[in-house]
Image (cartoon, rainbow, N blue to C red; front, side, top):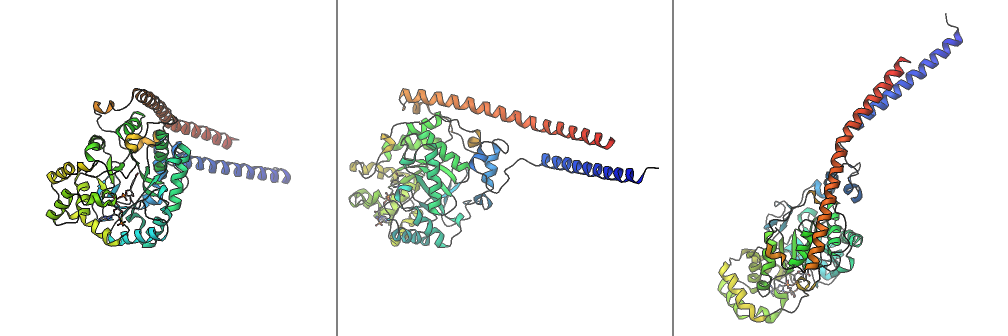
Length: 446
Ligand SMILES: NC(=O)c1ccc[n+]([C@@H]2O[C@H](COP(=O)([O-])OP(=O)(O)OC[C@H]3O[C@@H](n4cnc5c(N)ncnc54)[C@H](OP(=O)(O)O)[C@@H]3O)[C@@H](O)[C@H]2O)c1
């Protein structure tokens, strides 16, 4: 019979053994549960780095991060939100009203707040602003004050040329959202090709992936700039915002065709000829407007719509705002549209706007590796017309082609590594399980 001392020791030892076994079993159960959980971001909002480096599970992780943001909780812009304004579906699936409200030269402060409030009141559900207009804060304020649900107003803004570069452009995009006070933008544009354009474009893609913007686009890009993006292995932008009206159309027809072929929506600016009275008084325009029984502004805007462009007329006058929305109801035949283009060529040029489309050089910037996650959900370029290739100088073509090949190789290598990891993780889990089972078994036999 065991002595009382030995018995106390034995029962203590036995108790410790049981406790150890219990602890091990709990640890094993925890491992099994954790191992069987889908790998995803731990919090409601992943940082861009978490989402993009695949730290939580490969290329799709970034998308999971975006899905966790408030914008995805109530998918905006699917048509029903602005039943009264017809919308385009962009190549990335995002919907955008066909007519929006421009805010260039609307003074920051009271004038912007009043104008945007009046535009929303009139029925506009899309507002175009930019960092360089210095009125983002007031645009956001007016939208918030309107009481309209965030997802019912489509907001576009633009990264200005002095913030190009991978880091600076990301900071600038986030600063815009901060200024707007709206959590995200619906469309973030690069205001012009400027410098380091591919690098800057990568920053926009990354912001999209992080849920800072729903769509990315460019402005004032010519074929050579778009073609350089394509050859660098980047996905196409959803829109290209350019000066567009009957006077400039013939010289931009090739660019429009290029955009159409690659699913890039042309956003027309200057649709009202920038309000230039002499141009608005052009005989052919006035005649056509009289024949249609419509104001000239409506005819010009309908010209843009009939060509398949989005239009973003600006006005600080609530009466004109409403009048401009009436363009949606104008019936313009394709003969009338092309007749207007022909007739207005005698104006030559509006001479109001800058022209990076033709003048900006193609400056790719630093050759960055493009993460596969950035490409996962983006549309691809459609067929390429060999005629486009002639537009680029040889040196740019060579650089862009080299970069495109390098990016593709790296992407493929990364994808292979990620696939390998995906395969190895379950095998590792199984081995861990076997190991723990062996340890438990040994402990039970001790
Ligand atoms: N990405 C770029 O580089 C770029 C460049 C320029 C513009 N944009 C964007 O495109 C938007 C539109 O372009 P925009 O503002 O330059 O020019 P716009 O819309 O062609 O013309 C605006 C001018 O037309 C007048 N106007 C408005 N409605 C009118 C009507 N029914 N009849 C006659 N005149 C009328 C306005 O005066 P009131 O205000 O007095 O009514 C204003 O002076 C801008 O606001 C901006 O958002 C982008």
